[in-house]
Structure formats: C-alpha cells, structure tokens
Length: 115
Image (cartoon, rainbow, N blue to C red; front, side):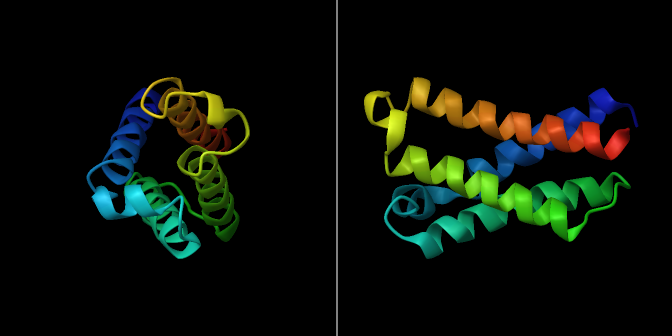
C-alpha cells in the first residue's frame, strides 16, 4: 500500500471517528465533562490505531498515548472554548484549526511509522 493510500485511509478513519462516531452527546458534552472528552479522544485514537493495525503498521503504547492526549487537548480548547478559540467561530476557523491539528497528528504518525 502506498503512503498516499495509507494517508487517505487514516483521514477516512479520522472523519469517521470525529463525526458520526462522536455523535451529538459527545460533541455537546466534551467541553463540559472530562470523562466525555476522554471517551471521544479514546474512540478517535482507537479508530486511528485500528486503521494503522489493519494496514500492517505496528501500534505502540506511546502512539496511543500521544494521539489521545493531543486529540483531547485540541478538542478541549475548541469545545470549552478557551485561549484563542474564544475569538473564533466554532464552526468556521475554530473547526478548521481543530481539524488541521488532527490531520497533522496523522501526518506525523505516518511519517514516523513509514521511515
């Protein structure tokens, strides 16, 4: 499988976990409850790691930890909203920044796993 196809598979896994698998409850509550936030970050991380494993790439505890923590921090900042997110449209530039962070996670992971 080419790195381009691996990237596309991981982007699909990201979209699946960050939208339909998140649902309204998790989306609305993740900025109000840390357990809900951790649940969403865990679902997202599990989906990404499952896709990695299905593509034949190893998944380590370090991978799981940093994917989950970075995702949770990014989503917390946007969902709360805190820091620079206070001034951003949550469905506009706020969402764009959040998605860029998650795609960067995928790119970093893929580069690290395929070098």
